[in-house]
Length: 75
Length: 174
Image (cartoon, rainbow over all chains, first blue to last red; front, side):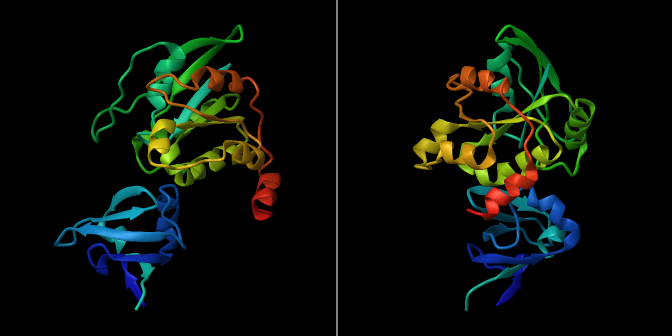
């Protein structure tokens, strides 16, 4: 099932399926790329940032960025 | 001769800089503060080197002022050798920047910093294999204790530009 990163549950994992072309250059350097395993650690209400972990690095992403990242999750 | 120290934020660039030059600097990068770089000098094998501590950057696509400073330093020092400093516990994401610098034609040496931290997390890195694939010197370092720094300095004298087309082939054949 495909979900936006902002729609993931707390602690839910998935594989990065795709993301907006315009945000790719920004995120690739941080190791956030298609095909990577990603975990949503926490998110803030009212369109707040989303905290994620890819490999061993934890990063927070703005809501606008997070909304453009699509995650393939099981079930 | 110039050496640029490059890497992501918080990988220990300034710690390596302090070790190489004997200086004692502390950098800070908060929004609103001026982002600057530090220059120091050292002798490696009787040759004087100017070492520049470049602000941390994730890629060669500038996103903020600090990254712009980093990219300007690269552009203004086309003859420099780059020491690409990676956090040994997160090498995959650090290699992205290292590749981008190689693509720009700079001779590169890779320092796998925080090697002790990687060991304590049971992360095993085959340094020889990595050197074989990348064809650039790779040196494990622990900048805060000084481990590997003299080896790193000597490897700088051996750095050569990488043929990234050949590199790509080697990676595809893995």
